[in-house]
Structure formats: structure tokens, C-alpha cells
Length: 250
Image (cartoon, rainbow, N blue to C red; front, side):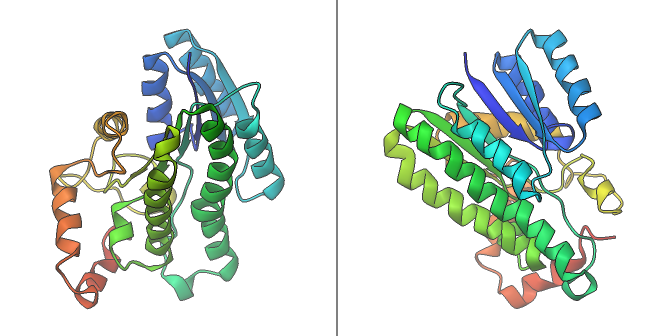
């Protein structure tokens, strides 16, 4: 029996990971800030899939809360086989329209939490000779779109390095790079969610990412449209790509 720990597990991509991993038969450790919502999701998954579901209420900006999640990942008596670093949020305004504290909080979740939780998980996984980490990044990592993109570019670089560094020790690490996805993410930013072919269904996104992870890939970029965009970013100058900054902010 495998155990998967998922951050940001009560909504959007994280919730869909919980659903699909539970359907595979994985026991779960769900991490999020909202205790009531965590308990509700846990109850639904236990009932639907007959798996064990543990909940950890934690705000990953808070170092004490983050340390509790790190300790759970490092617990050799209750091994975690898969870590999904999914928790995250974006800021609607541009850099100088946000406070430094708002920018720092985003960085703490998108970068610091990913680093610290990966560090906690990798040691026991490497010792056991098996395990995996999926870091939820973004297609924005390939575009010059402010600090969110910069943070996700770090996630990509870190994930690719860890994929190469620890693959020989039986640990798979992959960066998932979603494009626009039909979740609560944009609503929480107070940004209108769009429709049309650029908006991915979250079930498709997670299913594709798990298929890519099972194949041992370093990156998962679901959707032909987003594979094309990523390929184009390598040919288009950054000064042109910078014009995309307003897309998805309205």
C-alpha cells in the first residue's frame, strides 16, 4: 500500500490528485489551511475509496506549521511514497502594486515550502530506494511574467536537477506545468475564469500528469496547445514574450 502526501489538497489540482490517487488505492495525507474543508474531503475519500486519509492543518507560510509537515514526511515509521507539492497562489497586481510582504508570502509557498518539503521527503525516499515527488509548476515558468513566473522557473530548475540527481537512487521527480485550468485558482485571485480551448479540465490535467510520472518523465505539460506554447518560447525573444503579462490577470 502506497501513501501520498498532497499540499493544497482541498481544491483544484490538489483535490483532483487526492481523488485520482485514492482511486488507485493510495492512502493519503492531506495538507491545507481549512480544517473543516479538510475533514469533509477526507470523509468523502474514505467513503468512496476505502482508503486511509490523514489530515494535517497547516499554513505553509508559517514555519511552525511547515515544520510539522516536514516532520511527517521525514517519519521513517510512516513512510510517504509520493509527495505532491501543489499548494500555491498568485497575485493579481504587478510587482510594485503588491506589498513586499505579499510577495514574500507567495515566495514562501511557491519556493521555500517546495524546497523544505522536498528536502524532508528525499532523504528517506533515497534511503529506501523508491519514492517520488511531483512539483506543480506552471507554463508561466517559461514566460517573463513577474515574480510568479520567476518562482515557477525555480521549481522547474530544481525539479529537473532532482530528477537527474536522485533518479539513480530510485526516486522520481517531475515538474507539472499546467496552463490555464478550470479550478478555483483564478477566482481566489479575483480574476475571471475564461472558457475555450485554452482552458484545461482538471481531471485531464492530473490524469495526464500521473501517466507522465509513471513513464519517468522530468516534465509534464498537458495539452497540445501548451506544448506548442512552451516550444515557441524558445524561439521568441523575451521582450516580445513580456507582452503576455496581462493575460489571465483581468
